Image (cartoon, rainbow, N blue to C red; front, side, top):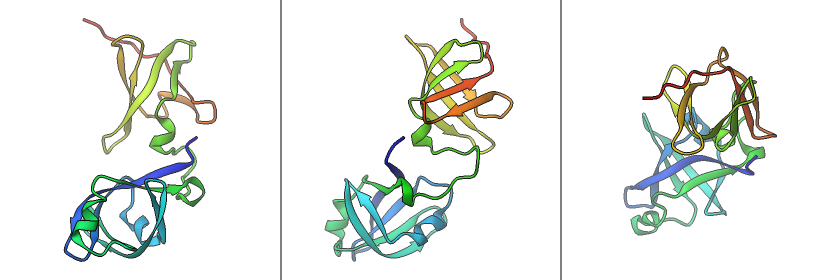
Length: 165
């Protein structure tokens, strides 16, 4: 498991006083109101104020007081230590923990590794890349996913029929 969890990405400066716009990588923008500090490039940075827009958070970072200073943070990720991350409900996982998990079917066949998780709104979809160019999209549904074992980097699913041309 990863020690740090990415919770947002700075997209651009906001205004002339050093604020930054942040794209949330979590399910809730409200999460940002609870933060006192984040890690950016491995360095702890204090948050002095938070404003929420409909789809973004605007943060004022300690020591960032001009638009030029804020520009230096463009495209940087905000991380928190795992112990400071929000508690997840049972059966929910951080996307960072799912990436690179090896996916097997219940018959023991290895399908590949989770390359990405696509959030569709109704359910997530695991994008699995196997050996060669083989790729499989697996809906993250309880009726399909039998087991998720983050500690052992393993996911077990019911067998899927792979269509080929």
